[in-house]
Image (spheres, each protein chain N blue to C red):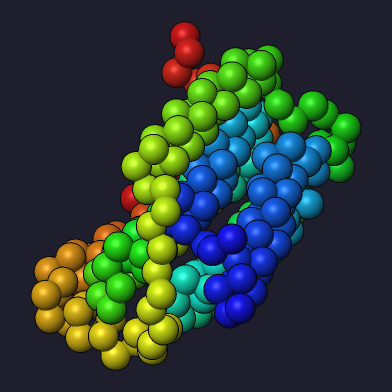
Length: 103
Length: 169
């Protein structure tokens, strides 16, 4: 059996689904952030796979993956500093405790 | 022969990636989840290398495994309490979460199988670093600069949110 494009795409779909599950069901904000990183990686996997199988010899897909990685870094840094700030205020990282605007 | 070897390596990495991702979303200890996520990101870098993206694989290792995950581990260690590992880590909607993500996965897999089945690549892997550098500073220079601005904004935002209450003005 030879590696085909849809094998890689199926793997990334599965990883994306696992990330969606984690983002929906984790109580811990840090767990949600980690699930989002999983989804980012599934998307990058797709980009690299399309680049490799459909446009061999070009690097546009890989350049976009560099952007994805950079933006994921920015997102993680801001998200984590927000988590730390919230933890300092309410002494918890669980989403059901973050109901300040709940009324 | 080489193709078969690549397929075997891909299968191993795929099984490893799926298992580690499941640990990330289901493990009761967030710290263990973060360690599993670190390994999963390394496995993704391996798949990148397998697909001929050498520079992207190196950046993935440097930025994700060496940068983001270290910060994440620090934040986890700063924000955990000892009784946390006794608590349930999923909310009440996990059944719907499973159904929803299964629906997404099934839809995606059916589409991918229908459209991209049997697309093979027989190219030899070539170094991509020089080409990516030329692309980033040539055709994609505007998004490149925009991303550097976003990074600066994220840096300032992180410092601002990290300040104590009295220090903000």
